[in-house]
Amino acid sequence: MEVIILAGGLGTRLRSVVSEVPKCMAPVGGKPFLWYLLEQLRFYDVDRVILSVGYLRETVQDWVAEHEGEYPFEFRFAVEGSPLGTGGGIRLAASLAEGSELVVLNGDTFFDADLDALMLTRQRSGCPVALALKPMRDFDRYGTVEPGPDGIVKAFHEKQYCHEGLINGGVYAIDLRSGLLDGLPQKFSFEKEVLEPACGAERLCGLIQDGYFIDIGIPEDYARANASPQLLSRAADFDTLILDRDGVINALRPGDYVKTWGEFEWCPGALEALKRAAARFKGIYVVTNQRGVGKGLMSRDVLDDIHERMRHEIEAAGGRIDGIYVCTAVSDEDPRRKPNRGMFDELLRDHPEVVPGRTVMVGDSASDRLFAANCGIAFYMINSYICCDAGRH
Image (cartoon, helix red, strand yellow):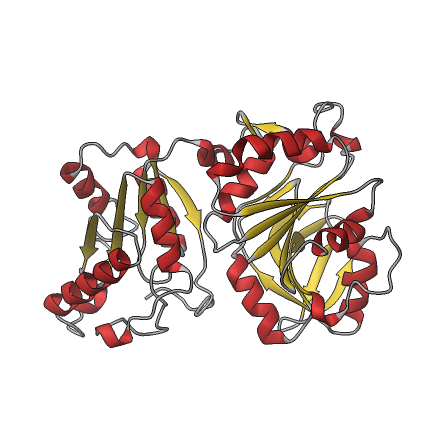
């Protein structure tokens, strides 16, 4: 995956509180905002990050030069001699890409959207552009986006107070082979000159993602970012990783369970991500509900065999799992069944070196998020893009 980050804006609305650095370098919780974007990219198989820079670009370039060895991807810089707008910045950065399929992020917006799911949505739709849509309530700062039942975007609506709606989250998957950036002036708006015409031609699709979202483009929201536990927790010095299993390590089976090893299918990129995690975390644990055993659809011995095979393949790929905690109970009242914290308490008894404040969980459901909250640990939401619309069973 190649990712463009638009980091060349002047940031005029933010200058009353941040005046000596570009927006992407505005400090949040003691880290530049760009740090949060790059940390999120660790969860994907990213080969290359292309930063489109202009205003005070040396600040960005110097910081990356100091820290690039900490990341598993290559950095390149597209330098705007003068402001090119979002469209011109994307086209300039795209000229440094080696492939034709790209993900684009805004350097002043953090949106915990599933980038793999967004790319797959674009590919399956045949549209040249897919955008991540964020559900919002009681807002007037953003315009709304209207997708049809097939996911094709039907209309953009101007900014006005809205009780409930979908906004453009500023995260795009684009296919350069479509020629969508061809024939446009040197300086142009991606939103006005690309997205709106694509919408009119029904060549734009959207994917609804309800991950954490914040845009630091105005002082009020910048202050919110600096007080946001969802964002600031990501700057903690994590040394323990907890993973849900279904939908994170292996693909979900809608309405069913993984009852045999033959039904176990790796989530794309999971083995590589676990290899990277092994180099970063002191402890990696799986905490999973497996009600299929309690329902008699599979035996505990079979489940243990699936987990033994899973661990073997993870280790063969260079990763590791240091412990697996399973709740097979059917009842939601069982104290060990997520979102109840019983399995985490068991993990703490087995591993007294684990500190909740230095522990982060990766899950794919509201139940996982609530489990993390009950345990007092940080949480990252991802969505399995094989069965991203399937409910948890």
